[in-house]
Image 1 (spheres, one colour):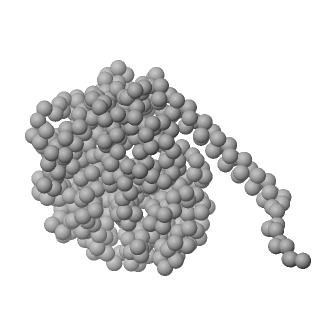
Image 2 (cartoon, one colour):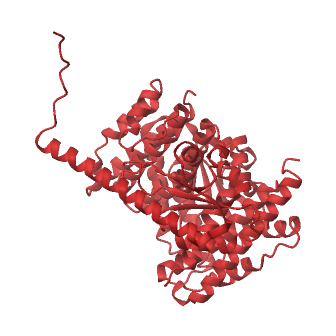
Image 3 (tube, chains in turn purple, yellow):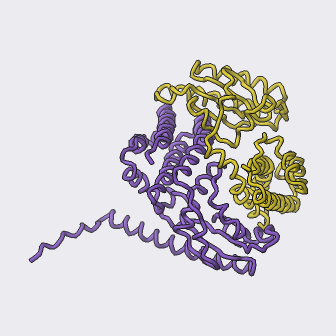
Length: 276
Length: 260
């Protein structure tokens, strides 16, 4: 008689309840999100009529700690026919039809390569833009018309990572670090730097073909993919910071925020030297 | 509180003194924007468009970095108390001076657009990576969709709240400033922001820049006093400008690539 493998223990008590809750929330959000996408697609198709060439949905814009699963929000690429003379009316109609919290990219078919061009812009835009071509190409869902996913070219991951680091150096240091230290917004600063590090890790993971990363599993994947990088050690130090202290009153909270800024700088410098 | 031109000078003196507490860890403080150009509009021009360059060794030592950060954050706190519209400045290590964002390179090319406030004048050393130059030259296309098309969300909204009006006006002003310089860079014309509109008019004959002048004139009006109908018209006109600029730009680039 063969030995039967021992099944993993079933979660019990609060762990079971929590696991059930997470699963339920995940499925609810997935369904709700799909419903919203279908509804948006119907409205866009009706509004744009014969001028619409195709419509592509892409899930999961950026790792979100609030909604860590990959089916939240996302965005739509609305492709007009090339013979459209004026795009202004169509853009106004498209934005009226799409949910306001969903990213919308409107362009003619011949302009699709513009989606893959690098950009230096506000950090919240860079956070969204940097992985867009990969999400469209590999995770995009064609909702209407031609399947244009093959036309999306993929920029080199190391170029994207360096641009992401450049945008962080430019915008995180002044608006976030100096701005929130000066206004005493210490807890927000620590949380935002935590989130920004996860965004950078997600971009770094493109070089290993990883796209579906959940916010809570990104650091683990990063450590696995870059075992030689000191960035993972820096992240461990960051995680060990007492985030609760940053939310309390007194000098300890400021010190925690200053330490967080120091570790963030270290993380950026580690990424720049990341083995490719 | 009424802001006078002299308040800007006093605020800069206080800032320089505050930053002096970091000693030799601050290598250079460079100003750009309206304060550097000498075209301050009291009460409207903000502080502080500046690059602060730190000794690169600051980034090797935890306590030295934190001490420098405390000095810079303290300087920001004092500037914020001046009553002048304020946003924090940028800081870099001297080892990063060749890797600054290329979008802003034209600001460092002339005394007309920038100047050293304190320390060494390191403007000649400021540079950018090839990838950063490429990104700057291509940024127009992302900005067209995010900044330009983004305003369309408000066009069909039933009612524009005061916050909506403020956001629309901010978006329009931001587009006027940034989309024009980005379009110049796409054309391979590395000019400073204040020269961008003239440069585009010269490069793309027939481009109607009228809406930019209207936005410049209306930016002084408090959001609550902005008429909804007028704002919707401005959104449509700005969108028309952005799309026209895009189409002319693409046609020009197809005919003669920027690097050619």
